Length: 133
Image: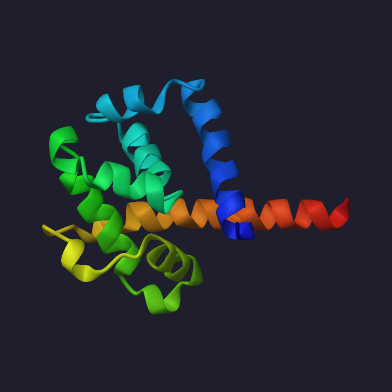
C-alpha cells in the first residue's frame, strides 16, 4: 500500500469519526442529499480504494448517486496533468472520460478540488510531524 493511499484512508477514518461519530457509511450515503458536508464526505469516502469505488459505482443508479459519480470523475480528470494527487486517484481508480454520464459545473469540480487540497494539507502536516518525532 502506498503512503498516499494509507494516509488518505487514515484521513477518511478521522473525518468519519469527527463529523459523524462513526455513523455507518451506508446510513450516511442514504441520508446525504440536502447535506453539503455529508455529500462531500461521501465523495471522498468513495475514492479511498478501487474496490469501494467500483462497488458503489455499480450501484450508482440504485442508490441515486449518478450525479455524485459524475462530479467525482469529472473533477479528478479535470486538469489532472497539473495535479499529482489527481493523477494518483485517476490511475489507482482506473478512471476514464467515458465514465462521465452528465455535465458538471465548475463549482462542483472546485468542491472536489477543495477536499483534495484539504487532504494535501493533512498529508503535509502528518509528514512534518513524523519528521519532527
